[in-house]
Amino acid sequence: MAERRDAARNRAAILAAASRLIGERGLDAVNMEDVAVAAGVGKGTVFRRFGDREGLVQAVVAESAEAWKAESEVLVTSTDRPPDERVITFVATLFDHVMANLAVVRALEQVSARGSGCDADLDLAHARLSTLIAQVRPYEDADFLAHALLANLRGEHLHHLVHRVGLPVGQVRLGVIALARAVLTGDLVGAGRDATMPPL
Image (cartoon, rainbow, N blue to C red):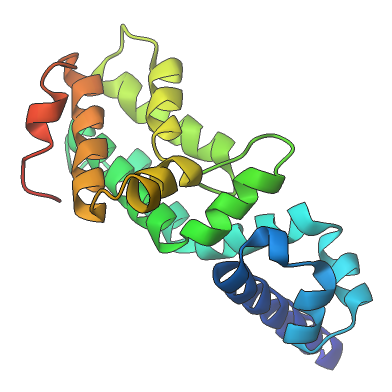
């Protein structure tokens, strides 16, 4: 039991250290030894627990996404709101998750062999979003539309808009929500107009 507690404590310390270092330095300036030193564990412990840098970053993003995943599951299974409202809420809350964890989400996109983004389990996020879209537009290609929306929620894309282009986070959030509305209505022309609507 004590060993299990130690293992859990070490895991939490490693994930916290990795998240902090990536946020402070960026992924390219962080290696497994840096994380081990910051977490107060041996380098071998980090490798045994997470395998490699991709496994470590994946675990950091998965840890940060627990609340978001629980909320997205409720959105898919809930029947107390129309599906179009649940799509918008899904997109808005995923945007908030990515922005709150932007450094580690971008790190995941950088190291992932599968090109994962937005969330540590992109396949699950896509499956849930496409399920919701299909409830609103059953005769459209919900699979493609979900991929298109998720592409606009990738960390690197949002970082570019906010930190390179210089758009305010609130404006980008409204724009992403407007795109989601346009996907649901087919009114792509109105997406820019909808971006001026009050945020969720």
